[in-house]
Image 1 (cartoon, rainbow, N blue to C red):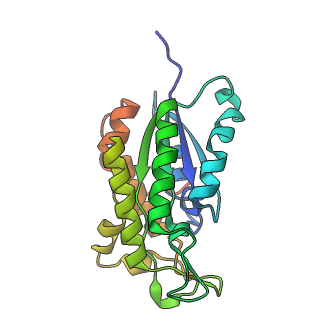
Image 2 (image 1 turned 90 degrees about the vertical axis):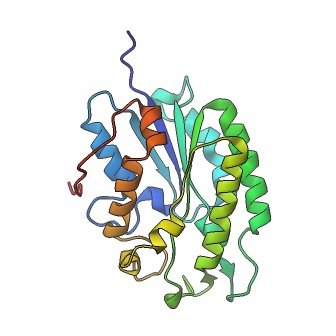
Length: 225
């Protein structure tokens, strides 16, 4: 019987990296630590890079797999993708050109997902909201929740078309009464509370748990190590 654990590569931007969570290292790190202490759970490789958008991830995803230790001779058993928020930003002013138009984003995303799907099991996450009151970010980038909603809809549409599991985040977070308290002062990164919310949601996501061959994780508590 093969007892080798499954490998999950998580790719994306600063959300995957865990920026803003000074307590638990981010939702991905929280999940990695949880699974590391769970018998027979998959091994997680967090590959988040701050500032990355779709085009950068599209350029690096396969090379990342080919240079990751035990993955060098095989592809991961699955990839979890969290990308798109940086693509929504408008440059210079609120009505400036976006980093990547919604149409171009969806076209490029579908193309990348098709290629990934040929290699391994693929799951996709939605986007997180922003605090528009403190824009612009870095004195030049304007993020908005209207754009976040539009781009997340593009992600969902691509996943439906390609029959891939999708975890919606944007509209769900906006229904939470205190969601604005989950955003860092910079307006775009989640703090520890925001990352904890996503951690709890993804740790109980049926699509992820079914792939991992794990029972639902119940009675989750904050993981601060």
